[in-house]
Image (tube, rainbow, N blue to C red; front, top):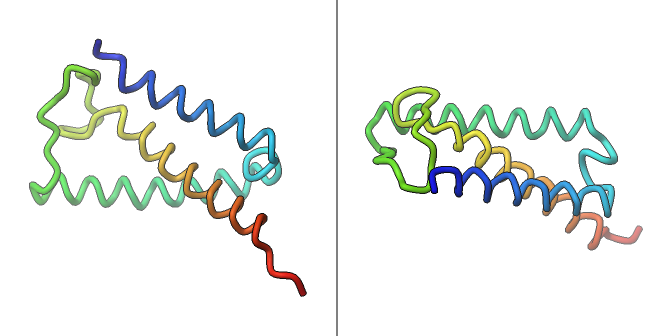
Length: 105
């Protein structure tokens, strides 16, 4: 039961990779640019999370669906996968919508 959240995140990331591969949007067109973009976004979200944890805004009381491993107190390992998923889906949406509705010159 504890692995369900992580498994769901990994399956979702796999689905995004399939979409990316099929349409050549990010990692399968510009891998370095995509990695840097997602790395920057994840870094900002990690800083945001750590500040929120420090301020007492974010508290992970634990869940039956998540692992008991923490990177730092109240920062579960699954958060990294979630932040990657969040950044990746946003990048794919931006590139996909931009590609779909490219203004004609």
